Amino acid sequence: MKLRAPIWGLTILGLLICLSHPAIVEIKALGVILNGPGMMLMGSLFGYSFARTVLGRVICWLVTLLLLEPVFRWASLGRKPGRRAVLAGGAAAVGGLALGAYGATVERRRYVLEKFDLLLPDLPPELEGIRVVLMSDWHCGPVCRPDDLRPAIRMANACSPDLILVPGDFISRSGEYFHEAAELASQLRPRLPQGTLISWGNHDYWHGLENGLKEMPRAGCQILRNSSLLLTPKREFAESGDKGLWLCGLDDLWAGKPDFAGTLSGLSDCPRLVMSHNPDLAEEQFGSRVDLMVSGHTHGGQIWVPTLGTPVLPSRYGQKYASGWVEAPHYPVYVSRGVGTSSLPIRLGVPPEVTLFVLRRGPRGLLRA
Ligand SMILES: [Fe+2]
Image 1: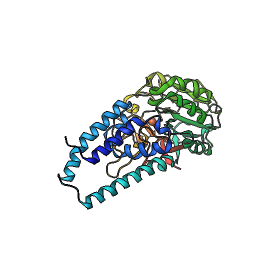
Image 2: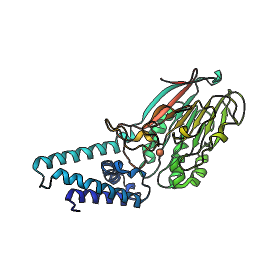
Image 3: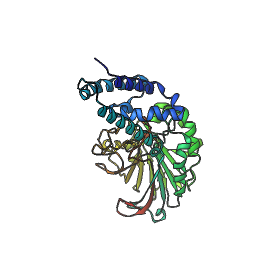
Image 4: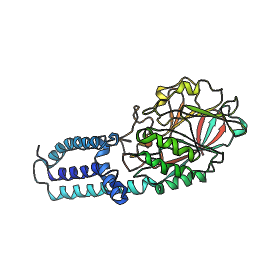
């Protein structure tokens, strides 16, 4: 196979990116230059985000190379490209790089507060007006640094939340980053004591859950791992009771052992908010009352392309669980776009999200506040 200069250039860039992390991306500017535009241009379209090892990423790049070589060959029609083609190619490359740089440096940190009234049937009048913040997928790691995430913590605290729910993916790449996640979690200020409730995501399992089990409770978080707490009308947590709001956490679908029936079937018949990192679980486990499942995991796809939607979405159900309110077969799910990024350190058209639900009594539904 005859490879042309642009292909070699992209190959070298790709290999540099493959070999660069996680150490080199610690150098922020270099991380943006290498990981940002390079990954967006090639890796995202060909499975980079699913590769978790250097070897996997090298294979992704080689496959990309094989796929692109005929395109380049066809585009040049075997002739030396003319001046116009060179200018057009250069403009496209500069445009792509600029877009990638914007996504990596600006939009990735452009937190949006989504505010809703959440209507729940049977909500005790004493719990009307409870404020619940949802902020999933922090992905503390070499890309999402504490200073990147602090504005999201401040945004959550500014909501004066009674409760804060974090359904997993605190870290990326190494369990050591739980130290940073715990430091951020300790800055959360829910009005209820011990009011930060968390469950685990796939990245928490993949990179060192044992660190999370130690660090996060020290930061004041209560872990719900196939377990539940009742928020009583007196706004206190209890393990049982027949009046209040159940707050439940299921284990991760990909890396843990979610036990829907074991967690929910024995609970009293009160409204239930259920955390599940992965929204796909709503298609696979059901059979007990759920008023709303809150999830993350898909990050809204991180990159939205006109007409295509979000090309990379880690879900078995296409675009269905990209973000927002989704009617699953048996109960509704709210999917947060999350606050961090994973694999691709870029967001384009899919800004990070902190969500505020103000709970109201009424027929089940979500109203934008
Ligand atoms: Fe995630």
